[in-house]
Figure 1 (cartoon, rainbow, N blue to C red):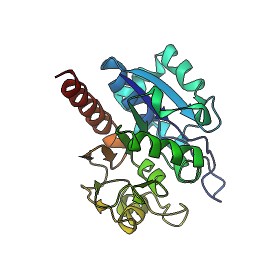
Figure 2 (figure 1 turned 90 degrees about the vertical axis):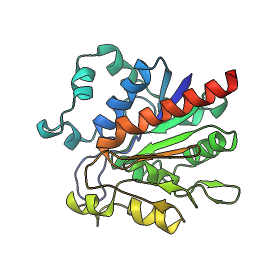
Figure 3 (figure 1 turned 120 degrees about the horizontal axis):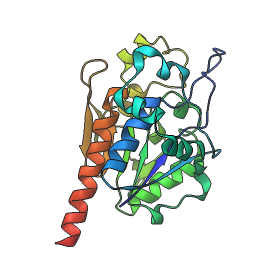
Figure 4 (figure 1 turned 180 degrees about the vertical axis):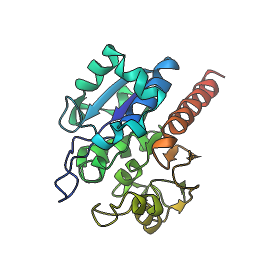
Length: 232
């Protein structure tokens, strides 16, 4: 099985003068869930090369086992440092696509026409689409059969209360929870920072950084069930 992971290339947190990017746990944890499941991975980003890491995600209090493993894994670090150009990716070459979050995707991937077209291509061809934390925000221009892809779907993502907790409600272009609801998504959430992922058909969403492992595991489970039904 082959999975495409799509990372942000955006490193500026609005007009705050602070840096952002992808949340390291949301890249590292799914990467190892997929690798340990024997999945072939390709990493891509709008600009290619090393996607920016949100410096807050690497603070001492935010360390996780997956991040510790990643920092000792030179081969994985090389893969992350050499992402492909997003515009060169085709859904025909993969079985599913996975979007890690962090605040960066809110600015570039949410508006990126290559990303929007790619997600629609995956979904239109019957392939799963997964996104965690802020990354469900990349779906806000994505449509399926003329309607928002999330309309009528059970979805989750970074909750308003979590955005308030990190004091970025007035900085982000939009609030993930509000936007998914506006588009007709059936938004659900657990407590702040709790692991929570939803699979509704071929759409998988995770609430926050703690949900990145669960979101990736959900995608592996979905791909395995598809593979099993195809083999049968």
